[in-house]
Amino acid sequence: MMPGAFNALVALQIERVGFQALYVSGAGLAASRGLPDIGLLSMSEVVSDAATIANAVAIPALADADTGYGPPLSVIRTVREFERAGLAGIHLEDQESPKKCGHLSGKRLVPASEMARKIGAAAEARRSHSSPVCVRHQLRVHTDRVVRILDDRALSQTQRRAEIRAVALDAFDVAEAARRALGPHWPRRSPAEQEEFKGLFQSLLERGYLSRIGEYGGERVQYVGERIEGDYATVRAQIVTTKGTQVPVEARVLRRGERWLMYDVLIENVSLVASYRSQFDRVIRTSSFEELVRRLKSRGAVE
Image: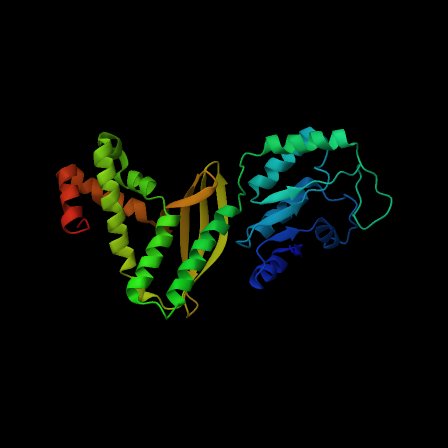
């Protein structure tokens, strides 16, 4: 079941009670303007409302795109506009224009050949073959797993660290983060040196962040929005403490096949990768790459 939403408030309630997806109702959007559902809203109006709804929640949102707002060429633009707005998908109706709500009588269907051309145009128009909203949704899955582990009092500290480590490795693209952390020095290293550095960088991250598990005090993560540019995306969120303090967080992710993986995290606009890159660069420029490796091996951190 996928409940319908006609504004962000309703969408938030749908998400809060536990549904895994929602539907941006065309009839609901029309009714919220005091209009009948007979195709009176423009594509721009629907896309604008749908974007507001989709960006208010972390669950995927599917939108009612009526008949695609015209012939196959118009469908191409429709798909790209909804995709750009962050919708997980759309549905197209096979009615003649002007269309009517499915509950009304007197509907007429277009020929099957015409609808096939529209579907073909929609499929070709997709820039992404995985759902844009799946960026936030996938990150939320990882976040929820971590919170469940932290809240599980039956786990020992060692078990908790091991399970969180497994989640982190599943969610984080260590190779991409290591490459960016080394910056201009990365292409100058041999494949063997790059592989060694990646392992050392992973160990550095694990020591730095897994050691802070004991600081967890019931904080929660709220997802705010996202921006997708091809195979890269930025997901905005905020950590909410038990006292209500909100800490802005931004995850930078990239697509690997059908999955989105993090390669950087910004907390209060401070980039994890940029911080390490500055430290690594200083050591390499004042000494050498070999000295950086030595420090990482001996102390697990750059001072």
